[in-house]
Image (tube, rainbow, N blue to C red; front, top):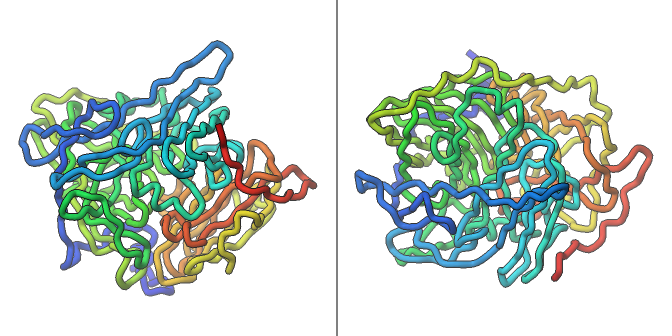
Length: 508
């Protein structure tokens, strides 16, 4: 038996971050809207063969225009529109290159890319490349604001391993509202090492994006805000890639699911209704050293995971989110809820796929002894280290090409998590103990249970910029919006941080 942690949680329950059991109040939610996996500009009506679920919309890949000696260029248009998400009626939504969500960007390690982002909304927004190692001026945080009618065109060289990332708005104080209205999309990084592995990789066929969000709709089908309590807005309808009551027909006996928790506040404990095990092969920052056989994976807002599930011809299995132990009690956590997320229907005849490789990548651990600096971050109700977010204040100054330990502690009774821009990290310890296998890989977002300290280690590489900051913050977006965020700059040895100018607005 493992000893209890100081807030009363069983340490195994904390470290595994898995299901706490089917709570008496758990409810399975199904809601219906039709979706079409071939629609170019967003989910559209289309029933599955059984007629009781809706075909999963698979976001199309963004077309690019490569040029000799020029960056590979992608175009995104931020726009408003109308979407039929539930049967009751249409609602106002926002999307990239469509009425809600966005297409999938796919880039390759070593290539230079440019993304032209044009804002056709009536207000300013931004686009943050969550998990991408980019220069601070290309990060898309609140300092890279895109005014109405303007175009922002960041350019960077992809310099990180294969991983499932995502992109979403990051306007100061308005991130939750912009994401909730529909602005999110997946961003996939490929590399040669991952390409050599025998993994499912045909996009939309045996390698599918699973962007999970919770929303609330009124009796007319209109998307509505709910009360902010605890973690923020909690919806009662689950969408996958913008599809409510989603169903996917599998044609191979193994399916790779790229899971993204794109909800603004809700955490999920994912697993299958028959408790079958699956292979966890990657987390936020890329592949694990070896696949982990498990039946549950918990993701808080902003976290990602890649899993491979095996199927038998002709079967149906429901992918669910189960109640979970977040180490916090009271209203506003959503931890006791259970949802049906996505039904997988296996075709009668399935294409055979190779088994998951026993080894995936070399995963070198950063030793604590390599750290030059240790910083402490205390997360409180609406601030970090007793400071609310200030766009003009530099909170931390980091020296390029150094390794640091960041000690993070949630001092509240409310669930929080912690996301760092521009860098990947490894978890050294959780409450003084080694992290479990599912948290032993590269991360950029991690759950911070109440009263449980975490030690993260990271190495800062790339480019310096004493003027333009990166962010660190809780990724429960209401918390971020009300002040739970700070800023750091990366400088050359001996260099000082400069005065941060007013947010850089992109104008036409």
